[in-house]
Image 1 (cartoon, rainbow, N blue to C red):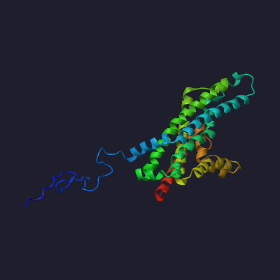
Image 2 (image 1 turned 90 degrees about the horizontal axis):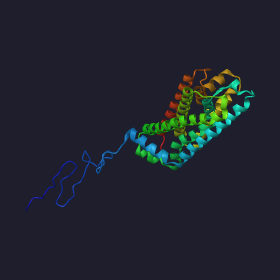
Image 3 (image 1 turned 90 degrees about the vertical axis):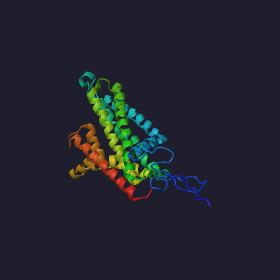
Image 4 (image 1 turned 120 degrees about the horizontal axis):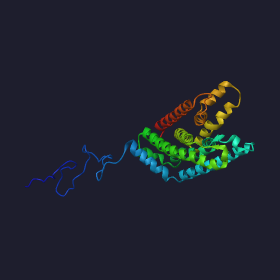
Length: 297
């Protein structure tokens, strides 16, 4: 009798009888691994892959483009309106007496009271829309590490809103310039600083909204909470002339951001406002990450 033939084996094959196809295995002899597909190069993973995925998803959502358009229109309309108010409030018949009374960048900064919510809507949709349509399950399957999910979303949202904020700051100043005329003050370094401040504020407050959205998981709950924290609660606490309540209001993210943007020194320097706002952002991200780890999608 002839002895049975064996199939030549190498890395990734097993012995078998004649006519049997070799079986491909992973590095340890088991199933092919996800990180090293059998027919191509290793897939891109980790934080870099998560960021690339979030970048692609961001621009594939139609509501993001509507939010961007709304922010541009709101900034242009609000800046023009505020510039008209400033011009009409000046009762001096001689513009030369008050020439350069207001920096153009200040108009853009004051216009953020309304414009910011269009930007924040885009930021919170990055996470809340996935919970609404169930795609968060796929996101967590592709990126199992919850920390990478939150960090990737925060990186994309922060980068986009930073650039958007700088452009909105420049747009607000450009719209206000012809309306203010002689009453507007244009200084290039000052205008650049104001535009960068607008970008930094919008980036931080957008990431803050993202963290709140990750913690609350709902569009309505997130939008309501962010609106209350940024505007209603600080204004309510500041109404009565009570020192303790006023100090609490000054510590909230909306007030801290406003002190930073306007360069106010009372009750604390602008850099302290920036640090306070950054602290709120980190707290919101921590809350979002905690909920994402403890609760199923």
